[in-house]
Image (cartoon, rainbow, N blue to C red):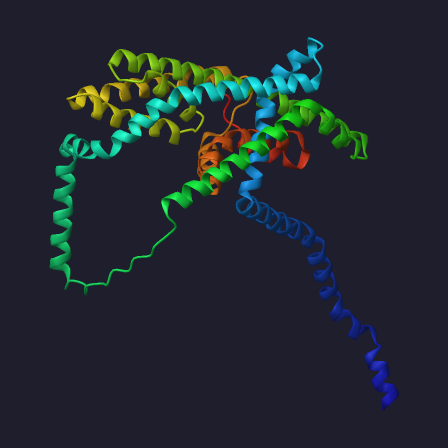
Length: 380
């Protein structure tokens, strides 16, 4: 009986039922690498974003240094063509940039301090001027409270718990220390980036073994340098024009310190959507503190908004359409995401990083579909 049992176990009829299971297992194994790759890519992306979030004090100065390197690379190339040594050229560019920022800061420190000093005294005046908008809000609040009383019993009185945080002095000291450390890091790294030139690119190409990868890396780096540098130069020139127009407009409107408002418009225009809206609000508040009627107060903010609309909807898209186009919805989402990650600094870097990522996707075969998705319709 034992030999018969062994023969039954080894018969082909008993082996045939296991073949479909083997084929199914092989099919699952053949389909699993794509899913595993997708899962690993998602985990890697989350780890990168998490690292950038928790290391913002280190990552932000480094990224700002690379962006400033792209912005100042044309000036460095001009000085190099004049046979000026790279170290002297880099030092000269940084000194000119630092001197310009220092002069501008000292010029604006007085007007800025004056407006900040007037802020506590101006609160009653602002409340009086904004009473036109406050009355409808008060009516809505009263109606809401009446509905709450009718809907149910009032909630039991909660005990107030006060949590004391760090004082203003400690916050200012910590913020100043972090800002100075980040500024020094950016300047030092920017100096070495300008001085090294294409050394970073050459070393990257040397460690890529296949010749095709080397050519692709050179093409991607050159395109990023050309397009992002052109984008930053164009945006900076247009922002300077917006700042100049805003300063002239505020001067003729009778608003004091036009240089302050022009510089503010120049800086805020780097931050899409949030920056211009902030500029409109600040100019409206300054108008309320300066003029007697609300229509006069609205005039500087309205002119600034018109300047921004003309620049943002016609001139700048026309100049940038030949260089590259980006999906506007994704640009806004990128702005919101990086503002959540890094605040105002993230909003400043959102568009350059987004454009750089699109250029990389357009040059790598498996990512070309993603690059096409990130692009716009090509119309100015």
